[in-house]
Image (cartoon, rainbow, N blue to C red):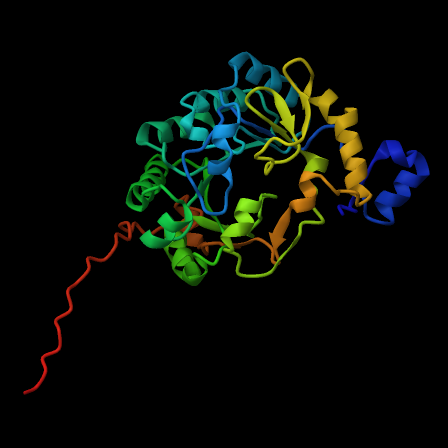
Length: 356
């Protein structure tokens, strides 16, 4: 279990807490989450092979967050030294046309050490949306793009069209470059599956040539049997036994419910609701505390955590090299304007002629 943490209330404080922290390297669960994710609109248009989204949407209540509730949450969160505020959670955030304005609301109020970040599949990353995101002050834009070949991408992401989405991403990269915008920092992300494993070098070369970092996340089953059934892992799956999400991250749904984790697609564990409670009171409440206590003791039987597995490897990334010349020009990484890698046209092979 996540032995790097301990509950201050169960430890008695004082010398015992000091010993745990300085001698054993453990940390107390913070009094307020270090990261807060906010779902402004539920649902996602993609049907990725590694995600149970399509198997839960029709069975769950869906909606958009009331703006008064959003402002209430943000007004509280910015009073604390949180590391990141992410207005997305188990959804496609850009499907919410209000999002750039909501991000701007955060930008105008957050502390200097707090960043904003979203992850998108780029379906709604139009020129207009892209410009609004740049103007919103968003710090980090993660683009979920799984594979670089057409067949690989469309197998990985289900119903999304490769050409359309690749062009959307490249269009945004060009828009950001032409405007000489330092933010948002763009990272292309994907999950390491057997589907795309054979083209990692192509993925690296293509996106690095665009000056874009590529981050490869290890496969998680998201505690869902549907993902297990896809058998897309390339290495053995093992219990995710050292997770610290519930120790430092809070996940808020569109209706104010606070769920246990970013993989709680079925909303199995509701720990409170911030409509009539503060984020802090839910975070420090008995439901959260009792679950953490059980988790730290290894008592996860019958919980969402029991079924959570992760591929036996860590995340890794491909980072473009930088140059002094590029830094002088104000470009952090080298940039090569490349056309999208459209699929090769199939050629007809002539049949061999049999000698008579």
